[in-house]
Length: 595
Image (cartoon, rainbow, N blue to C red; front, side, top):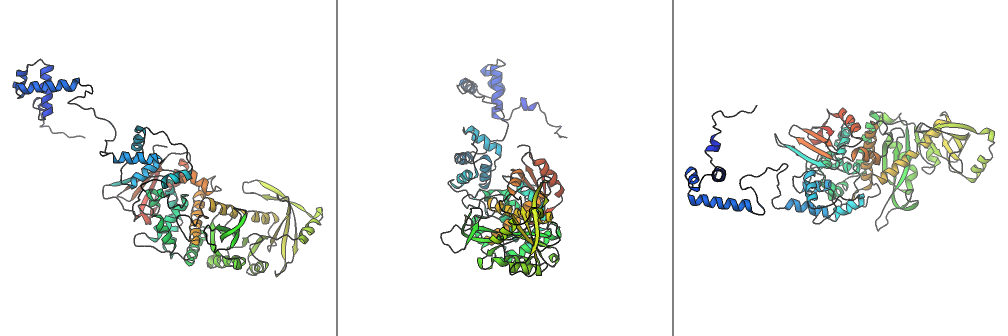
């Protein structure tokens, strides 16, 4: 309840004015409203008669002018008081708008310059300057707009996230505040501990966890790694994801990756592999496939590899990926594959997998295409007790044999599909021996599979039902889908862009980002099958306001969109988590008042 001083005489404010303007107002009131003469006014108010006449003259001039304004009283204007006394902020905002910066981009840029603005104040400046609404623009146009701005915007120097002083708060905007919704999954599965225990390098300023999460932030946010398009290194929301004030500059990413070795990547992948096993996220099957990562330089130190993305062979780095068909997680990757040893990749993967004793009896099936390895290596897999499913290469003799099989020996098999539907195919199985393979194999001829020629599956598992065998191999095509996703969304084939990153390290970070998306969408009913681009559009690509207080509490208010209620419901299950790489802070997610 408001307390007042009981000894104050409020009437004295009107009878004994202390301000000069107040005394002049009362004197003029007596002269014009009460009919006092100049001598009476001068006597009661302590002025000379000449002074009274001068005040009357000035008052009439002020009230009778073309731009007359009340000389004593001014109307209080609602809203934020103007702070741009020199016009610097207004000029900056207008210059950015002339370069086709959107309001959120202007907010990020001005925040990096040290200006304390809001979206509403920026919109008012733009509206008052007469700018129309921006037309719809694609990502490349936005990138060109940012890169062409002169003078270049300078982002702050990256450092560990500072906490506000006691009784103070720090509030800022982010175009990708939704990215922070991935952070609970890093803690839930102990990925932050795996990073901290890895042999990856760190600096005195940026820790190991913050370093790796800086790369992951760019991967998850679908940022094209052009050094000119550096608006991302001014977004404090991306910096918060990595426990920093802002992400480091492009040159830092290149310098950091140069210190990473293949052994570091292998060690980290093994740590992640243990996490997937502990959480029962891996089935008994692994799908293997190659992908070509193109090289766009002038020199040609690389071998030619077939690129399914472009339908031709080109100078590239041959990489291999191993994917779990049940969870969709990528559990292994290698970019050091050369032609002279690509047939042995399946054995190398098995050695990687079995380096963890807990996994020795877990993996039962390896699925790959016909050109992945040799028959000699198939024999080695069989000797190690691993079941394989692959496609046998067609020969003229084998095609003729299939054509000679009587119709009565073929049978119909119903194969279940991922969407709950099924497909009926015509199959025939038999046992055979092949060159360089010790023992007998089971081969299955499949017709009505959408191809002009029958498919020929080959396996050393004689007990698995035909329908399950066909379904297992059909799911191998999922790894091809994931590879295409890595190229399109995670920009795996842009290793020669503005940020020069070692390809093997880039692939490892891509695998981590891919798996985080899979873990994220697994908790959302109806979205577990969605690709990374869909998850990004629906959940991650969400601007918002972020508030830090001195009690280690971070509040994230996301802009309203259709999928926000589902997201906030899931985020509420993580309200008690603390994040060690951001000073042990707790994060609370909520909805902003605007869309």
